Length: 335
Image (tube, rainbow, N blue to C red; front, side, top):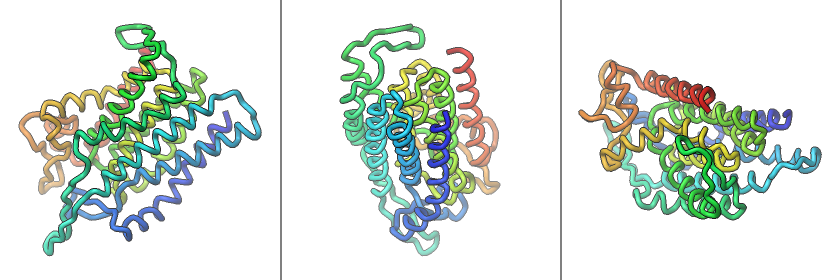
């Protein structure tokens, strides 16, 4: 449908032209982060999720306007608006996490980031209210097609229990597999494109427009976030990707497909659980530019590639993106 295409173009160019302006604004406002895995630890703007969020919403509103005033389609725009409310709320929580940083000047190395952030127990608690818009409109279908279980009817518990649980778990899980230049946006591009194609083929256009506008917004942001990054994504982007992912899965009723392509983050969750969520995904920078695993045990998917052979940051990012592409291809073949 042409309206999906044009809405996606609106999202792409919104982020493409807004990002350099936002970068200068955030740097002047002191909303910056340190690229920890580079020599000299360069300082740059962070919280790129705000820019991507703007692109997603403007593209979505363009789509809603076209359908409301010109096409008069029968699409359930209520689900779409509820999704935007949830995504906006969770992105703002990520932004709060981004700005809660103490910076200590250092005359030799410039600036050191002391990340205070939100406490582990605060993150799920604060993201829980973001599920209310989706619960209020009873988004999704109570009959779920799950891996290994088949079709299950959850009745009212779908909206009252599974929707908030999914919003909290997925939005927080996407925040765990992060820290490499281009990793969050790159993985997000792969998953959103896969979700967009899958929902489009099923005729779930409300979910499809959300996926495609997010894909094109992330694609535009990658120009500044790919290695070597000039703009850091921040927690606002990781939370945004998670909340968008779960919204698409719920309103598109594609739980089986969604769970399957979420495998990398599920693995990451259990790896981080081994360390009681204290381990970091980042590696230790060596003189030759490669990264070594910071622990003897593996506590992140990034550590897996660090232990396979010496790799630079961009190589680890590309390896993880290829892994997710493989997972998504399998999902299309098997589901």
